[in-house]
Amino acid sequence: MDVNRRQFLTYLGAGTAALASLATGIPALAAGQSISGKTADHLFGLEDKKHKFNPKFKPIEPSTKDDVVLPDGYKYDVIAVYGDRINQNGDTFGFNADFTCFLPIDGSANHGLLWVNHEYLGELEYYVTGYDTLNADPKANKRTAEQVQKYLYALGGSVVEVKREGGRWKLVPDSKYGRRVSGLTKHVLTGPAASIANEVTGTFANCSGGVTLWNTILSCEENFQDVVDDCRLRDNRHYGWVVEVDPFDPASTPKKHTALGRFSHENTAMVIAPTGQLVVYMGDDANDQYVYKYVSKGKFNPSAGKQNSKLLEEGTLYVANFGKGKWMALDYASSEALQKATDSKGNALFASQADVLVNCRDAAKAMGATPMDRPEDVEVHPIDGSVFIAMTNNSKHGNFYGQIVRLFEKDGSHAGLDFTFEIFAAGGPQSGFAAPDNMAFDSAGNLWVVTDISSSSMNSGIYKSFGNNGIFFIPTAGAAKGEAVQFASAPVGAEMTGPWFTPDETTLFLSVQHPGENLKSYDQPTSNWPKGGNAVAMPGVIAITGF
Image (cartoon, rainbow, N blue to C red):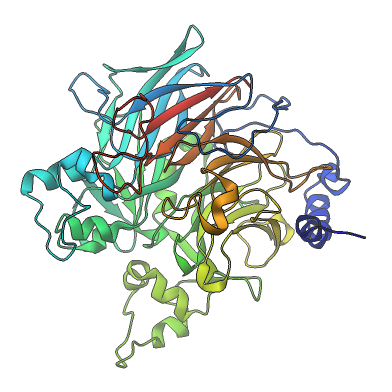
């Protein structure tokens, strides 16, 4: 029998998937039937209504067009781009939009707050600060104090109010909720490493994130070191954390939760374990880094509201050993391996739990965790509770196209210590996608995946057949399980990031990040999205409708 690679990988995982689905009482999965279930905005409790979601579209072909390309019957609205005013004080939307999430106002699917991350500037910094990064000597940082201020203000995140009126999504530019949380905003630290400082200034390198069960935002600091160097900041221990922001309270102080560890965070995926404990899954987005989960000491209490935030201050951080199917506690008090760990000169690496959390990568290595191929987004399946992990790629291992791993906690216990896993889908020409990055589930358990082929590799060499980056639709059950079809294509040089549905699943929010990247000179842009013509390309967030 002629079996392609995707079918072979599916056969490998079928038994594990069936066992997991039967254990969780979802026989439809084991039988390979179509499924539908609760839509809860990625398990974040924003809606309890049950309904089926069955998007109909003719898949698009790979594209190199400088636009957001969608199937027939779908359209997009540009909600906000860099520099747009977001409140009465004149604050403006930040640069390089990434993670997005929608929080309804008064339960409305057509009116709410949108949080958007702003990750980095890179070679497009010229359009923000005027600093010519294309021609500057990377060893001679000549940014002025004013340029540094502009740099830091452009990063972090934006709270924007959005409305759908007359079939079109629009930004409310004078919103009372509109807020910037930037590289200049004061934050407090919580948890075992809070003693680093009474307060820290700024958040940046904000990649993906998540939403808590009490309707606050978790924004994840990823490649912070570049910003620390560019802006000549003194203490990099202040960065690399998970940041909690209350979007409904513009006067609130953001918190950095040190109990969740310090590394290049991609996102958070929150779920309640059968024990009632809060569990947060996370990946460290770099070659040969690790997959983590945090398990709270206390139990989630729905009636406690925002007081549940304290669950993120005391608990146990674990790291995964995929070879053994074990979660290993990064707990200094109970781990002899951490207590005896030394550097190349024989000096002790850790003297406290705070040291372990500040230096998570060293701690994970000392515990024998499994280095992975850029573990980026982690999401929990809304029906069977399995955990999906986007492994973007790792050229050092010959893994150029990436893959999606599906992890099954033993007995469905997210707070447990044992798991198995399968390769759910593998990138490559045979599957049509490469470099999986952010993911989102719809209420029927279908996976929506955006890709992150680097702008320097896009449309060349082994990546030429994929065209621009895009978003792909992958069923997790039924006859088409694991088969990817393309739903959208991004403008030139861009990646689409942060997919998020409204509670009624009639709108999909996406960011268009770094269009026009990989340019040779500023007077010869590679993209002019979204205005076209000779306009400078600008990152922003869009709303796709037609579902």
